[in-house]
Amino acid sequence: MPKLTKEQQDYQNFVKKKLPSPPILKNCIMAFLIGGFICVIGQLVMNFFIDRGFSIKEAGAPTSIVMVFLGAFLTGLGVYDRIGKVAGAGSIVPITGFANSIVSPAMEFKREGYVFGVAAKMFVVAGPVLVYGTIASALVGLIYYIFKL
Image (cartoon, rainbow, N blue to C red; front, side, top):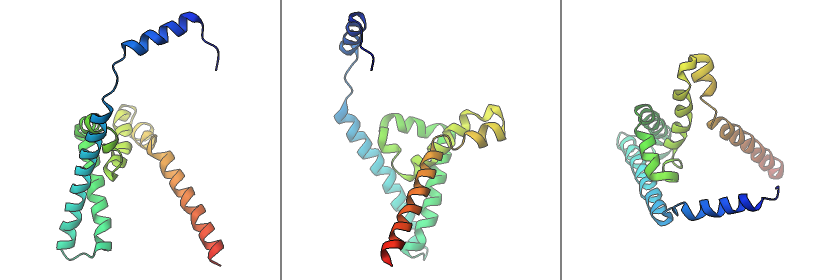
């Protein structure tokens, strides 16, 4: 890192003094409450499917589908972004945050057309996560297979 001049150091000190300190405790509590509320909604959706005769294992897939739909739908309406401003990390941890990370870039670039805008930009944020998850799961599966023999 290049050495800062006295002027640059003075400016950085000035900025540090002027910036308000973030309310860390409040942010943590809101992330916990709203993230937990999203998870409660997911549990209610799962209970709905279980009450309809699904087993716990079978109810997982439709629950995930409903939660991804809700996240994408709320993002499309602009509601999920407002939730994210209040909840912070609490809104990105559940599966609805994954839907939000796919829909947001797609909506932002829809002016560029469906192919070069929506389709190309849809996985800008989620793409690296999907690639990492796929590669990591393949490697873990391979290691498990080798050492199980």
